[in-house]
Length: 96
Image (tube, rainbow, N blue to C red; front, top):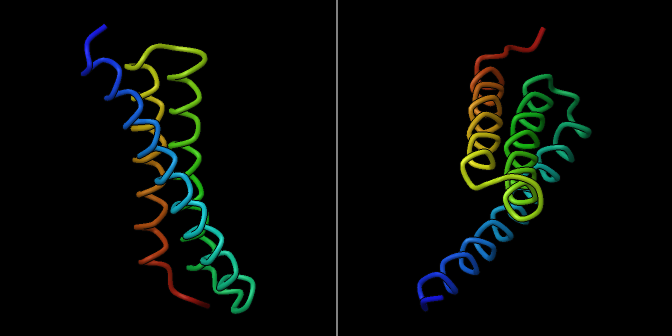
């Protein structure tokens, strides 16, 4: 094994962990705002960030334990696209 093969996977794991923690924090804070205001747009925003964070988690688990890198990337990219679509929806949602 080369130095590159040892360090890149470790760096990816660290960055995925940071992304998961920050995504979880954003999701939590937006959920708190949703509970306080009951605004539909904040609920959709929370859902969008939750989906993106879930995508990061599932891709990391899949890559490390279940499937190859490409399948993990496919899982993450799909959930990222869905999450961003929900966030875009939340930005266009108007309150009744």
